Length: 216
Image (cartoon, rainbow, N blue to C red; front, side, top):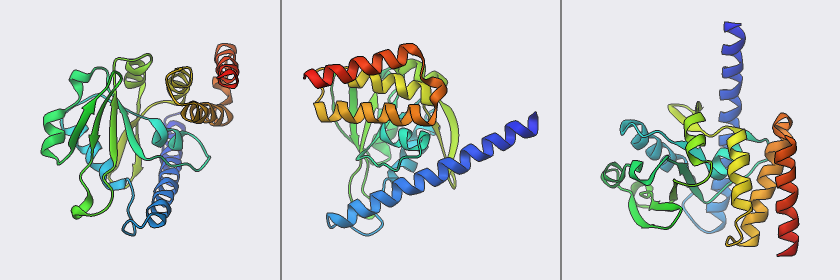
């Protein structure tokens, strides 16, 4: 049993590494298409965020597009790094500022930062902290530490929690319909890879969100 669990964890880490490489590859293609420096990806800011969070002892969960990429086979990328913390008081502001991050403002459900550009060049990746919203505290508590690249270990939200968060986001009427459609697509992708999570309650909520989007 011990060896079986160890093998499963090793397989999970290997899969995460492969999927994150795909995401970084899409980053490079995007950067080249808009004239940014070759090799510009989210890897460096992601490592910086992880370093700050671990050194400050901040409980967190990676959510958003990067987490979905790690939990599904469908290649995808995202423009930002999205992190959940239990409360806004737990965002390590002083440590982020010391590491070169710039605070760009706080909204009702997010605290927003820009990562420093590598060697003064390249894009400044947006880093969004979400807190004090439905499902956030549960996602942080259940996050799984996963080695996603050499020397990079992240607390990643579970597929079950990502489904809950994405359904909640898709149901928010104030969000743009295009973003809500993207949330729905992420839920479908997560359920395709993790069909055991497709409970009657989840499927009912998914149908309701889809119908609401058709009427919007």
